[in-house]
Image 1 (cartoon, rainbow, N blue to C red):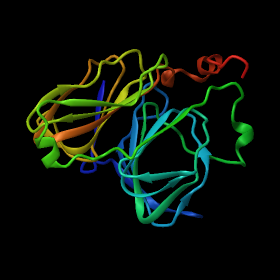
Image 2: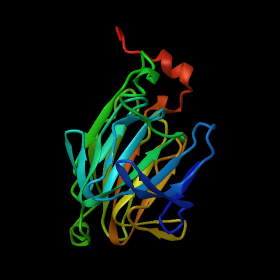
Image 3: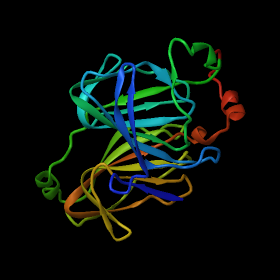
Amino acid sequence: MERIGTVEKKTRTRVFDEGNFRGYTEYLIETEAGPRPAPQAFLVHQQPGWVLPTHFHLEEQFQVVTRGGGTLGAHALDAVSIHYASREAGYGPLVAGADGLDYLTLRTVTDPGAWYLPESREKMRKGLRKRQESVGPVRVSTSASLAELAQPATEVLIASDASGLAAWVVRVPPCGRATAPAQRDSGGRYHVVVSGALATHGELLGPPACVWHSGDEAPMALHAGAAGLEVLVLQYPAFALDPEPQRMARRTPGA
């Protein structure tokens, strides 16, 4: 299963002006809630100085800062910063800097919305393993630096472990070809263009386009455009597809 999300072909735009949060969201991939997988991808534009309070979600997610900067809790954010949060892992506040903050939110299963903390703490289920990872900012390649590549190069951002969680950045010279890292047991993965262009299905996809593949797909063929290609490969743990009763059974000993 494959889904492609671009700003040019967004499904809708939603404007927010709620309390401490002001901005708008462009929905790139939408799937009706219920099935697993049910990919969901949207691009948030958060206005300068505005705050998204600390909260959690019911599904695993990656977030990728594409423009601007700010902070996530104690962590500074810049393009391209990456954050992963497991189900019911509280994170935030997310504060936009002076230039605003744009970021992709990427899920392999559609989530109904945020639960804010501390008022929703009693809704967090005991026994769930929780995990967060922060990476970056990842150096964004220029067209000149991509042109200097003699061959494709892959950099590990989050080392793959038994859960299946992993992340890489793949850099491909102009008009070159590469293959995404081998996909082990996982809950699917997103491929996010951060520089250059990805040639696929007769289209050239530039930043911040994303392509979602289910876990049963072969590693994606990465064909670069004339300016080269830099793409993030963000892989979800296998349990991202578990319904709640199964996920509740995956407990950390002693937790």
